[in-house]
Image (cartoon, rainbow, N blue to C red):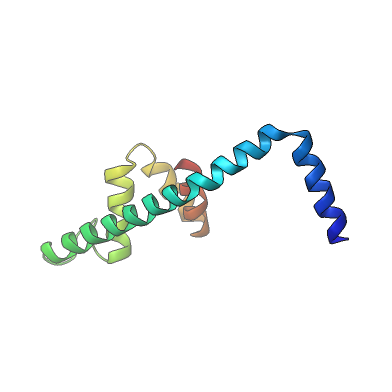
Length: 104
């Protein structure tokens, strides 16, 4: 059964060489994109940590590290989408990941 699937994929790739080229390009770019995301999250984490240490006591945006990171991401980097992301996230926290993956 697996061999049959592999032969079907091989036939599909021979029939659509453009699709194969696109998939190879996506694979080549995925490392750079993943590295960008990791560095972006590290930068947000460092700045959230600095804001948490600098602020005295509880604030609206920096009560905890997750809230500080969320505030920096939504209000500073993605201000046009902040209201929508918060509204969707109120229904289920899993939607936060889904909506951000769609926006970004």
